[in-house]
Length: 218
Image 1 (tube, one colour):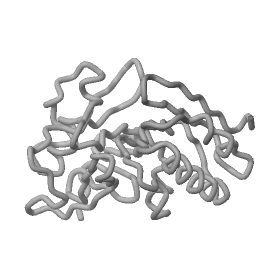
Image 2 (image 1 turned 45 degrees about the horizontal axis):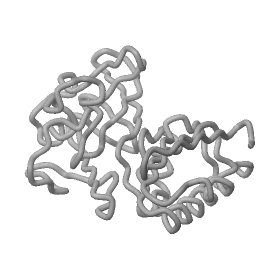
Image 3 (image 1 turned 120 degrees about the vertical axis):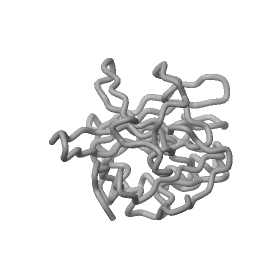
Image 4 (image 1 turned 30 degrees about the horizontal axis):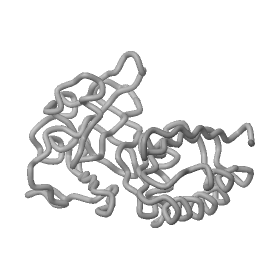
């Protein structure tokens, strides 16, 4: 396998876990992975994908289509900034899959710090807060969209992993893609997989081209 591109596949019950890392370019080995992924749900972790070029995008879209056709539902987790950029550019980049979480650059002008946030985008079945031992009702993305919390109240610093996390927050019982008084855009959506992620261009945070800025304005 190309040293620039690495893949690890593990199976537990009817769920297949696929972790991709490195560079997805014309030398990728995605095609060889199709037969290694059994039928069922495929959870694809792309948090360590550093770069993907045009040839890689073509191969990715074809590969993901084959995985969905052969195996069923696909869930993308911990999407790296490189993957998020392609999601914004290529309309069928995620196929019929659901984006559950993603990384996004974060800049706080008040403290003059730049970080990378892991954002829990699954507002139907949020899990990240619980996985790191925090109260699932802790404020997060949904509270920001609703204007009920400041971003400083929502960020979690996970020291062991060395990352900052924006959990899903307190999710209303009835989800909608448009909240009163806010201009909302769906960042990732796949009803077939039962996951809808809603984010908004609001004063705080401002989500533009995958970048989150505290204290921005429309």
